[in-house]
Length: 152
Image (cartoon, rainbow, N blue to C red; front, side, top):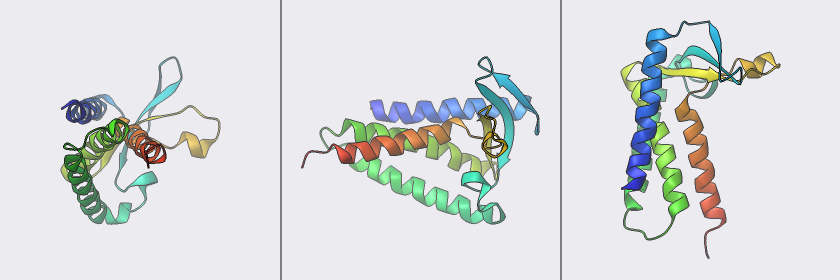
């Protein structure tokens, strides 16, 4: 049950932030937050990573849905398995992020991204993320580590 709560909390937190950004953020404007450690910037990502596939946003949405459903099946299959906490935690993070971004793709037809880093390199500074992106990365790392340290 804990793992379902983790996934739901990630979805709800990211959903809430995205709703706030949609109402209060301005496209093309950035604001420093957390004493300048992050930049708040509203961006509509119509594709996938770095807006790749924006011209085929419908296909990206279908692929996102299929991958999220596949991960959900894997997640459900772990319920009866003892142990594997790192893997289950990773799946929870992955699913929380995947559900949030997939929901955006299906409901809004774009993913709301809202945070970037104040880096000197303009190309890296221009990349905009959301909480789900970080959770997907953390989840994938947890799953990789769970496989690396799995008992043989």
